[in-house]
Structures are given as C-alpha cells and as structure tokens.
Image (cartoon, rainbow, N blue to C red; front, top):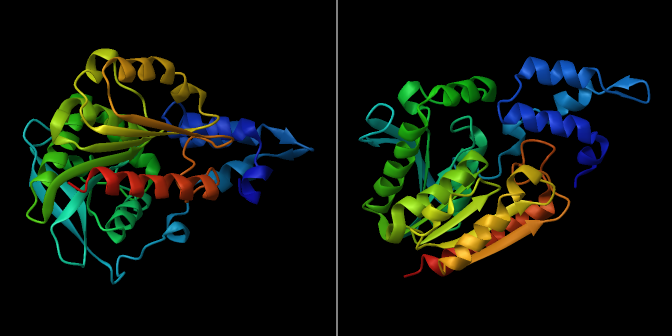
Length: 296
C-alpha cells in the first residue's frame, strides 16, 4: 500500500466504502469521520484525503499519439431513453481491432474510467466507455451527484444501456468482431451480467470486485472470465464460493486472482485506496487475458 494508505485509519476506510456505495452521503461521511479521534486528533483530514483527485491520477493523455478519442452517440432500445453516449477510443495503428467495453462504477463516466479506456486503446484495443447517465444529462462533473443520478435510474433500463453499448462496440466498423468487457465495482457486477446475457457474443470478461450473478445465470456464460478481488473486500468476496461452484458446474473457463491486503477499489489511482503494485499486476493480467482471448 502507499504511504498515504498506512496513515488512514481502517474505520475511515470503512466509512468511505459506505459512502461510495450510497449508504451514507458525503456530509455524513465527513461528519462521522470527524468524530473518530486518533491521538487526540480528528480523522476528518483522513476522510478528505480519500476523496478522488482525477487530474493528478491521469495516466494517458487524451492527446497521446497512440490513440484517438471522441464521444459517440448510438441507439439504445429498451434503455433509459433509447439513446446512449460513450467515450470511444481507438488506436492510431491500422485496424480492425479487438474491442473492450470499459464499464464505470456507480457514479457514471468519470475521468478515471475515461483514463482506463485510453489505457485499453493504448494497449491495442478499440475501447468504449459508456456513460449510463447520458440519458439524464451525463456525468455531472462530480461523483456525489453522479451517484445520486445513477441511483435514480431504473436498473433494468440501465443494464440494457450497457448491453446495447456492448453490441454497438462489437458491430463497430473498426471492430474485429472479438469483444471483451471489464468494469469496476458496479461495472464489475455488470461485466458478470453481460457475460450471462451475451453468451457467445462476449469472448472475455474481466470484472474487478464486482457482484456475481446467480447460478442460474452462470449457465448462459460462454466467455472466458478472469475475476479480480480485493483481499479485504468481505462483502464482495463472500459471494465467491457460490459463484465458483456455479462456474465449475457449468464448465466456464475462469481464473480468479485475489490481491491480499488490498481494499475495494484498489485499481482506482485517484484515491488512497489505490494499491499500485496490485493495480499494475491486475491491469497487466487484464491486457494479457484480452490479448489471449480476443485474438481470434
């Protein structure tokens, strides 16, 4: 973990997890953190340190010579509004390209997820990061409002917007026809759901600390799956035994990696939950997994 991580009390991390998952709002997160006393000093500064810093966390510039990035709109029948918008990033080399859908957390398409899409394109994939909030105005510029907006949406319609985004990407003129998906937190759970819904249309899925799907839904999975878990993420990790049993029972090609000592959200380099060694390893494994399974 980073030096910053070591300074932050686990109780504040726990409150931050509640905040990120919409159980408490920003004001309550900060006020409850302020009541935690460590050596006679309030832990409020720890809570403030956990809030994301997107500008500092950018790893691939939108002007990087290896990529071209733009926003695109496309139909989404059965979704929130019938239309979707996403961040499409293509390599500047000659296509067609294998494709990767990059699915955001529970707050819309924030700058971190756009950066992940650029990372995927820099690795040679045609990447699309859909904004599930686009039918209601798009990511509002901050995670608090984004979280509230996403919570207000009809879940089945939001799911359909992601399914339609995957199909749009797979059919894109620059696509090789090989489709992968990855996502984080809510997006990790959506990656698992996509695998169940798309069947043979999805070749590979890499969920990061996402909720699993039911045993009944696992029966529809045909993609190869690589699952990334944070070591201390009890809420998500408790789903794994049943999920693994269902994957085995249905002969799904799967791999699971658990990154010991890491926190939920360890891949997100915009907050101190970030664990660079684990995040780098997980991303390198993700790129390698996609290269292996999307090469056909």
